[in-house]
Image (cartoon, rainbow, N blue to C red; front, side):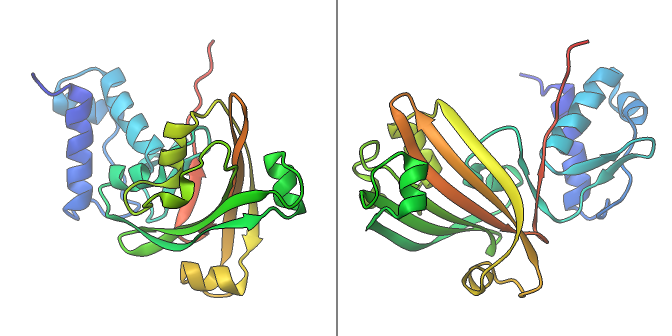
Length: 235
């Protein structure tokens, strides 16, 4: 089967970036130029540029054009994705460090987040997700044992907590907040960042049909991470 034109364009752009021909912040060919080069419609060229922009490979500036994105990793604001898949989709190596996996008693904030009684047993995990060996996210998660009784038996070097929980308690609803924070000394050490570097924290609760499954805090170093999304509105 022939490769679709938009996929050919994406492969061409990624190849130019990975070979070093197009450096960071370099301007890439326009829709018209790509359409002429690949003998396709502007719509097809636009699709390739849009998908690479959504994936954080390119950046668009209104009135100026499209450019090779900076080195920050990008995640979607509009969808919940497995961080391991996000990293692999960028063509980078994924690894994880497991710092904690245990049962604890729910403090007041955790009990409220999971809709449980104060002091209820909950599962607690702390992981550091790395891209190319560099820490990208510290994930601290609390899980309601009723939805994932075997959570503590999992090997999270094989699959992420998000991936496992999606299998045993399929996601039906999620709520998250995003805020800038100054990392604690412990987080600074885990993320290998200086004390002056700000971080981006995503606090997320997820539900299945029967109730709240987990509450997680996902902390990213500001110099290595950004959030983005693409919205389409009906006219």
